[in-house]
Image (cartoon, rainbow, N blue to C red; front, side, top):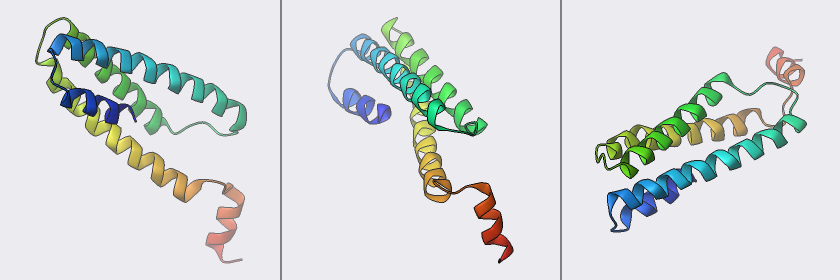
Amino acid sequence: MTSTVIAILIAIPQPMRALGGEMLMAFLLSSTVLKALDSEAKQMQKTLPSLTLMIGLVAFAATLGTSGLLLLLGFLWGMYLYVPSALLALLLGALAGWTFLTKAGVNRSQTAADTSGT
């Protein structure tokens, strides 16, 4: 969702410093929402989250925040740093969707029984 909002902001003609400030605000808002969702999920979840997903989310937030900060400071090449962040967001969205579709509501003992044919 964050990458979609930023894509809309990029399409709006505006100074790069303004875009950097907006990207920084999107980073802060996204991080706050992810933190709130994480605390809710920890109360409901019995297993640890995927390490790949956690590293990806941290990398996404770091590159997005750095890109926004660089643009805010006037370094136009900060826009190029947003590209890996956007690609990472797409990849994480696909990974989260695949995980949800294949593993949601299935416990490990049920999966083991299904694969053994019993």
